Amino acid sequence: MKSIAHVAPETGHEATPAVTGRNNALDRARTFLTIIVLIHHAVIPYTYFGHTDPTSWIGFDAIVLATDSFFMAMFFMLSGLFVWPSLARRVPWAFTRDRALRLLLPFAIAALTVIPIAYYAIALRQDPSLRFTDFWWKTVTVGPWPSGPVWFTWVLFVFDFLAGFTFRTNERSLDGINRLSGRGFDRPAIFFLFLVAVTAIVYVPSRLYYGPSYWFEFGPFSVQASRVLLYAAYFFIGAGIGVASFSRGVFSADGRLAKSTWGWFAVTLVPYCLLWGLIYIKREVLGNPDDLPMWYEASYSILFVIFSAAITFAIMGYFLHYKKSGRSMLDPLQHDAYGIFLVHYPFVLWIQYWLYDFHWPAIVKALIAFVATLIVSWAATALLRKIPGSQHVL
Image (cartoon, rainbow, N blue to C red):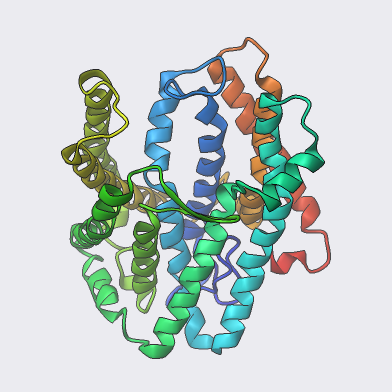
């Protein structure tokens, strides 16, 4: 995130007064997550289980298991960090207007253009004679109308709106989280346990009830049913961290978390390996059934939230310790990261479409898809940012 004089590329939130100067660690953590999104989408067709390309590699399953378990939740936490200071400096209508401009406008444009173009590549593989105009019209009138990764923007707007309402109702409602964050300055394990407990309470019952694959859908407005409360928890916990005294909280560059980075990466290995153990049981012992036993879903859910919290702490600790000053290879991407996130999806799907018939190893295809998507998305964002007024959105 940026200082008071700047606006964060992905979230548009102004930084808290407790942060002096540019917070390089948070800027780079957010840019890193954008890269993770591109990697995630670049390798999915080449996973071993459920792959959509003739080639696959089991290593990509390991990547997808890790990325899918944390990166969107962490995005919501980073997005929430500076909500409270932003609300304190703005009248409600101005905050809502700015968030709508930053989040709902890109969502509407992407839902009508970027996303149909992306999914046309998949539809064309199934029906080579299908015209884009017919596909687009059926998508927006009959459906299904998937939103791809840009669902994040409309859900974030809803969370921002709820945060604004909560702030106006009781601006001290998140003080308890902030005090706990202060205790996490010296003892991050306390805040880690709090994060695991809260996210387990909201996620485990949701997954048991809805299952892992069900999505709430209304036109292009969609969100994974079992995870929406998990995302809300990460967002509001992030908002609580940023209420005040950020420099003395759990995500302080001078705190204990920044000094114990590799220990947190070691912690992530335990739930991650146990998740693979459950996947092995599902496929080799239970026979990969459509309906899994409740004990399995409950065990998976608990390990999921532990891993998600641990990897979030590990990544934050890394950037707080190693990337808080100096230069980073991520820095050139920072101003364009949000735009890259918004526009990359059609590029990656069409590149994968063109690579489909080549008899190349999965690693080669995935590498081409990632690098080409990053370059083209970055170039497209740079061009879009030249449009007058686009800087207020991208």
